[in-house]
Length: 314
Image 1 (cartoon, one colour):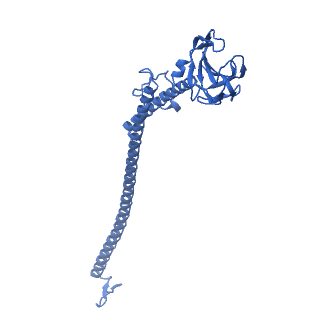
Image 2: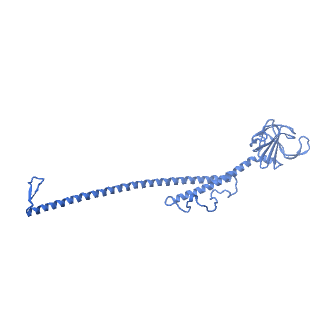
Image 3: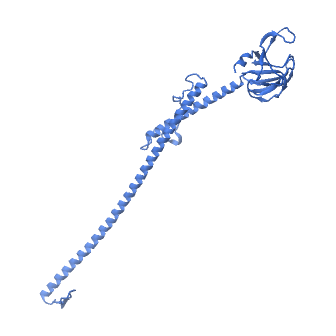
């Protein structure tokens, strides 16, 4: 049996006679070399494919890490923005607290309140029994990691603002009550023009000439001039009354009642609400009168008192 080897070059084909020992040995050597070369080639291709897979996986991991770095950088920027926003808001709240302190202090001074009754510079006194935290939150836990100091400052600022709001609400109510009381307090003259022609107390009666007690003061004026209310109140009487002529009586609260007599005409009716300075009648000379004027009385808790001090307190 013969083995023919054909070259890809120009050399002629070679023949090996497998029947002879030399030809068989040469053929086996050639086959062994070819097998070794084939196995090496296959191993090389297999190793190259595994390395390519590992390289692809490594590149994917690197891309994922790069993406995570981008996300972390974006989160860091976002966190910085939030911190800056919180710090800015904290500054605004602090400025607001300072303005409230100044306003509260000024209002306290204007209201002439006792020192220490309203203290806007100090924290309000608080207390109460231990209660379960809202929705089971742990009040002893401190916010881990993120902005614990700034959050604590914001919480303290909220507490301060709450205390100031409470004090301002109480102060506002007190000042409103005082304002209403002041408007109900008789003050000023019952006429826009004219002069006081008779005083409160013992005097000679202008009609009889005998000694008599005068329960008010008189303001001389012109017929038809306005008669005005000296404080806010409600009309409790409007009409003719013996000795007074046309009379308007106003109740002001806190035990005060004022009377305006001898009017030419009353301009208000019983039940009308009147305000300080409102025209309620026109000057006249009805009743026991010797000329156009207003007889003005002030009653406190049912007793007639001297109107002069209320006239001067305007």
